[in-house]
Length: 103
Image 1 (cartoon, rainbow, N blue to C red):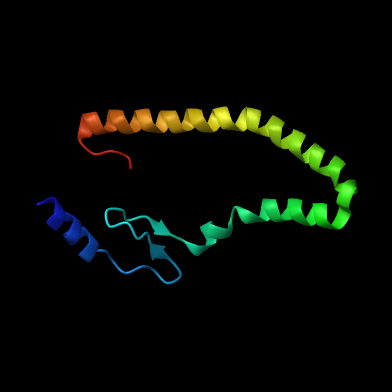
Image 2 (image 1 turned 120 degrees about the horizontal axis):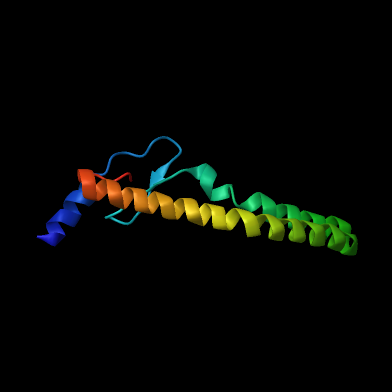
């Protein structure tokens, strides 16, 4: 029974949109966009380019950047985690009251 359900899921996947593809796992329908695969790379490339072009002179710049990111993440991360927690609680409450969740 479970095998036929997985086979139905695998066979009934819609066609991906142009430029996007679905994950290869048969039970997931996560659509991956090509832009998201490269969105995390520019910050790392900036660090590499700075270090390669400026050499030792890039250390103070990178140190200031590191300190700025450290201060920002000390504020942003708790806020983001709090919002994620609120969304999960709202989803659970909505599911128990209406039978349908947010996500």
